[in-house]
Each structure stands twice: as C-alpha cells, then as structure tokens.
Image (tube, rainbow, N blue to C red; front, side, top):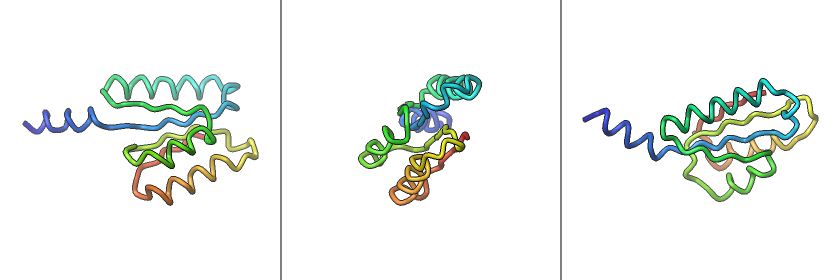
Length: 102
C-alpha cells in the first residue's frame, strides 16, 4: 500500500532543469545533466527544461507546481543571470530544493 502511494506521488513530481548555453563547451557536464534528466524521466518524474536562466525566469514566475530545481551554469561567465534566478527562486518558493551544478 505504501509503495503505491509513493509511486503515485512520484508520478506527479516536476523538476525544472536549467541549462546554460555557455556550458555547451563543457561536454562532460552536459552529458551528466542529460543522464540525470533521463534517470528522472525513467522514474516518471516530469522534467521541464530551460536552456538558460533567462528562459527559466518566466517559468519560475508563473509555475508554483515545480518540486525541485537543477541549475547547471558556468560560474566563471561573469553573468548575473544565474544569481538573479536563484534569488527569484528563493523569494517565490523558499523551501523548494535547488541543486546547483557549476
């Protein structure tokens, strides 16, 4: 009975994966993110993707049904977009887990 409840809850889970176009150069990181996405999908978790923090911003602003965030970004780029997205996430959904792959 408990397993059925857990399975039902997992089927309703949604994860937003935010990439960074500058990471295209870092093939190993992108492969790791892709494997993680595939694993999540294999567990019936809905994966929503955004190619950049800027693309993710409207999703975060309008969708409160996301259960976790994975942000893969280049911290050496000098861009403030990932930091702005993290601040926005915390302001909107402060208790949602955020995984940062940098």
